[in-house]
Length: 116
Image (tube, rainbow, N blue to C red):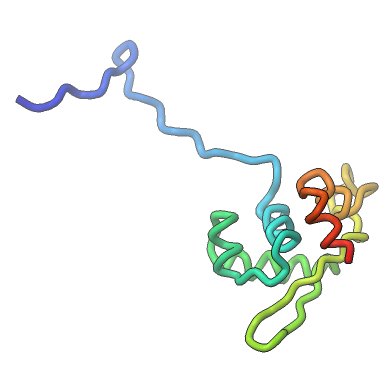
């Protein structure tokens, strides 16, 4: 005898799980990752954010083009410097800076290191 089928409510199939959403975009998540670890590899950022390495590359290019990120080659690795004085891009938030955003998301020790 086989196991019973999963219970259904009022004869309807169970609803598919909704895709989870977050308050920050992937660009915001990449910023947070690099603020915490400016020497992070693309692979590590991709895993932490939950996106592909190619998506991280595109986001880094966007952030560089916006003047928020500077990439410096050190040996075989990249080191990233965030320009936290840059304004946020959406008109609703343009009166705030990248520093203000990160200030709500990072620990004090991380903020101090970022300011150095």
